[in-house]
Image (cartoon, rainbow, N blue to C red; front, side, top):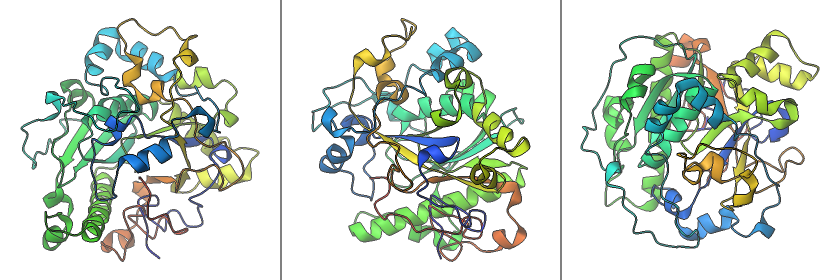
Length: 393
């Protein structure tokens, strides 16, 4: 009966399958493993290693059975048009890592810009509210090489207006946030002493002598505590739709639901527009209508392999200053698995979008494991299926 990171509040996601086929809903999540160098930057309790990455990344083209998918690519042109070339150049200067041989098992690359001397207790109080209607609860651990792309994309796509970042206690770096984002987003940065309950902090922080199993349990506890604390904060701030997904995941439109996908993704706030379309106008698909009228929408994930094909984007005219190989959304376009029948094309359990304004006082009274898990921080809002223990590997 526990919630998980995929269903943060169980009662808001009752009956929602975590394994729905990506094509059954108009929205889904693109999940990128990226290069080995990028993947290995985060060394967490789930046991990331080269063997796991190589198995999931499907480097050989024969192992990739999901086909090519360029549906997300147009976002970059829409974003540049929205913020202007000069601003885009500035915001993208720290995106990604330099391209290295994908067969390299060890990387000696060190980006000095990632090692910031910021206080772990840093909290920035937003000066004002912005127009972005969506909020996000995002966990951070040595993710600066992916953070710039993730923020830019979701600021444009959702649109993101309020970002709460939970810094993992074992991170070696702190979030690097450009001044532009601090001026255009409400951003709060919290550490474990702020999102874990006062009497629970010791159970959240990983120590050097912790066993692998104990480290993993603490990792799960931190995820859960952060998602719950973030949800409560956002409800108090009067926020509504909130995403609970990782820095290597991008919410996008499913091509099966929009024949003019290229044009849709070039429009700022296309995710919100999709939700409003199905909430207000309804749809001939009762399944979609039911899902989008709830306070919790479970979005299935599609895994993109680390296979590259430079010829795929030859029809796109990218600016000469843009290094597309630094962007996961532009570099990796091969779906590892095909979109087949329910439960066969997913990449593990899905992730939740929850309207936190609909959390009740009863939901908020309880915290901790009895309320949910990292994938379902609030059981009462996301009742339903259990998830794989190895999610995220």
